[in-house]
Image (cartoon, rainbow, N blue to C red; front, side, top):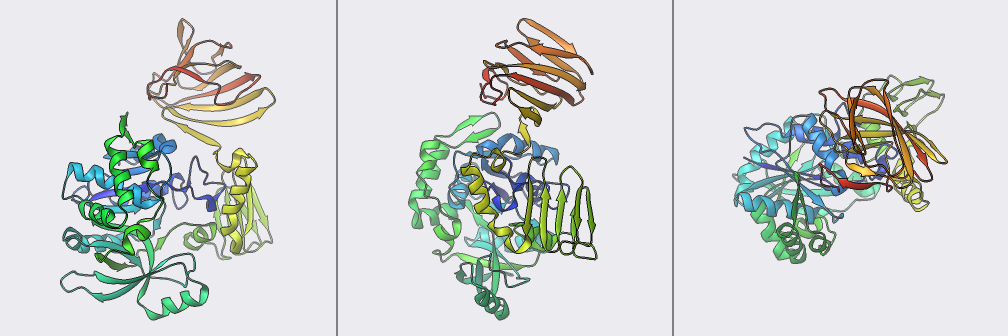
Length: 471
């Protein structure tokens, strides 16, 4: 069986305001009801052919990743936590080290977590057809038949078919993101395919090639796994060791140098979901070319991407716009300039704007919360606690808290007293009091929290005990 390896380390800044560093695009439901991560896991859900996936993700996203996989009944075999971003070559190497220890003949199917496939069946057929070639030592990548002369993708030049290897073809060259004229020429010659960054390869072979062409990455990944530590259901890669790995892609570190590379052409309706324009291209549109998601009313609008994640959005007489309304930020951009968002988000972050990185809904291992309102000396939150969820035993030095239960049952500890509260009941947590909130029931707990004090930031939390290892 094949071991899927799902890479979930990106930030997706070109899809701001929905995608933010602390809750990036792979965790968002951009193409359907599921998140892109969930859709990726479901593509390899056939347990007669695929093992449960190994996921490599940012440590900040660990609980959201685990929870999303649980929601679609696809729990990971392992979740590896990157202490910092180091591109794809080190991330894949860490997963290969873990798998090679479990199964010396492990074959990995490396998948970005933030791509979409409208019809994955042709791609899955390609995976099945190329498995024997990968087990024989080839490094297989999947080339997407180009639907247009895109300048935002790299290209793979395919050579002749390999006798006895099914659809596999030799890789003759990799082409960096081309200009418009070059892209048109590449698409016209019929031998070039978009580079989707999907690979089927032996863990052992990858580590061998990495030691040959980028030994510093191989050494850093091996040390980060060997010196890593288990944290609940996660493996934290060693910070000092992983930091020594140069930040390189698998293409640059291995694929452009190895003689083992082969490509399988496929046409699965693939998109890298790299921008709002890309989403407009793959989403269902009305008879005027508009994509409308959420509470949207369009009058005379044409060729627009219109999305509201809450309040009513009205677009009148506009063309070729992207309008995305989040609870705390609104984006209005021309479709042709949506790629400039990365620089805009960097400028917002440099200015200290929380909207650049922090989502309106913040996920925790026990559930999530949303900031409803805030001002000088106060903040109001809506808190949702999953059945069995337990907030840490904690205290605050600069604020008091008032909890009002809306639905469900809350078990509240304040000082030496523990009691249960139902809907409409409330409790005050005085400044400095040791306290804890637990959902002891089978239903989700909803409550409103009103914070008051000189400072209401998240770093005014002293955790004394925590079920999730954060104390």
